[in-house]
Length: 297
Image: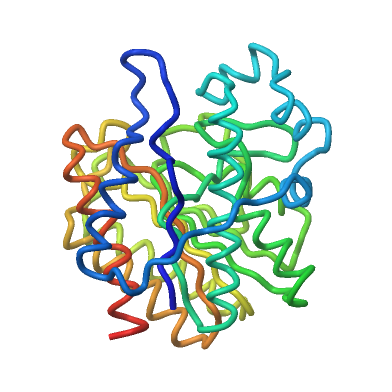
C-alpha cells in the first residue's frame, strides 16, 4: 500500500484571519515521513477531463478561466487564483493515485482530498472539485467497478457526494455528521446519521456500528473513507466531543470492515479545525498510521 501526498497544498495565499488551516498538510506529511517514509508516494495531478467526470463542463471552465461569480466564490470560501486551480487538481490527482494503489494492493490513503461539499455545478465549503466522486467514476471507467460505498465520517455532511450519486443505486453514501452543523441545507445520503452536539466516544461508536452493518449488507466492490477529524472535542467547527482514543476506535472499525469485505479501501483526509492545530495534526496522523498498521503491520 501507499500513503499518497500532494505537494504545496499550503501555498495558497488567503486573506488575514482566514480560518482554513493550510499549515496542517505539510506537518502531517512530515510526521508520516518520520514514521512511515517508505510508504509515501507523490500524487499525480488530475486533468480537466478528470474534473469533468463529475462536474458540469461550464463550472469546470469557470474554475479554469477564473470566471467564477462573486456568489460562487463566497460559497466556495476561497478567492480564485492560479494556485487554487493547481491545488484543486493536485488534490483530485492524489486521490486518483491512491485509487490505483488501492486497486493494486488492497488499500491506500491520500493525505489530502475528502472534498465532499463540491456539487456537480458548484463548489462549496472549501471544496472546488469532489475528489471522491471523480475517483468513483474513474474506477468505473478504468476498472469496471460498479458497486461503491462511501463512509463519510467528517462532522459535516458529505452533501456534494450524496447529491452527485442521489440517483445512482450502485453507490451507497453513508454520512455520520453533526445534526446542527454545516451544511444547513443538507442533501439526502443513502444513510444519514445525524448526531447531537456534544456526542462523545461511546455514543458515536454506538451509532456507527449499525451504519457500517448497512454498508456491509450493500456488498460494495470498493470502499472510500472520508476520515475527517473535526469530530474531535475542541474543534472550532465541530461541536462534537470525541477523544483521540475514540477516533482511533472509529478508524479501526472502518479498516476492519474493508478487510472483512475483502475490497479495496481508499482513505482521504477531511476536516480538522481544532483551536490547537497540533491536535488536528495528531488526529490526522493517527488515521494514516492506523491504516498502515491495519494493512501493512
